[in-house]
Image (cartoon, rainbow, N blue to C red; front, side, top):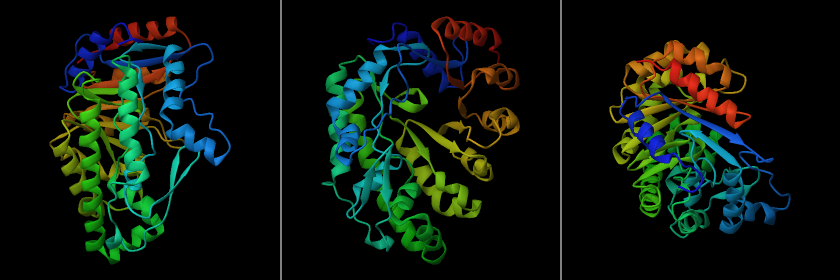
Length: 355
């Protein structure tokens, strides 16, 4: 790998992470951005045409990411990876009549009124663009960097993009069968894009796959699952509408990870932990909510269920996390201001690692 000399050792640690094992310390990714580099580099241009090129032109995407990689120090398990990013819940864009907008991310406008009208479109711009970008990134990389799986995550989140939450939530009560049929169609699109992208990136990614923004790599097919809109529904509704999707996706993936976004999802935690093939949970520290260090009880429940745990942390949180949690199956991701600071943090993490 061009931008990371110690990838083989990092790969060994990441492989152990999925098996609740430790090589020499818990996994830790520390990024140092040098020479004015920023991450994510999202100085998005102002006109509609410029924003569309920013998100969809492979040459422009590759150029700015190469520049970022050349000015990043990847410490620990951090590694260079190009994000295949066409919006969270991006598979909403694979259906006829969808409406999207390119801004600081990619956003969808509600366009679907009747869930039974949902129809997959293999000729949709965003479906074809997802595959085009995956191929272009792999062709450019030639092993220099990893290429991530797409952010096509969360079937209910995608349906919320298409209908709008004001329409979807009442439909889940008034038309549950129609909503279930729509979710099944979206699951079909999810499985199709995941298989096709994995076939494109697998060899470049040394037989595995990765999630760029979470710094995760795993052997085989690995991707993120989520249901951000679950903060608005009860656990019985989560069981009825979301758990079938998660079980199906865990059956597809070799190493499935759930993106746990917000303490409101704690009411769904036991449901998540009951899924045998769910391998890891990523705990998000949401702005305005208490930090992860206030939730050791829940984090210990995750570890007790033998699920690996990924946390994006601030440097001051590292020691209390390591003192309160097992280092087995633990992965901490953060930034440092210099190479010396990053290397010192790794030495501390090694010293604080324990079973």
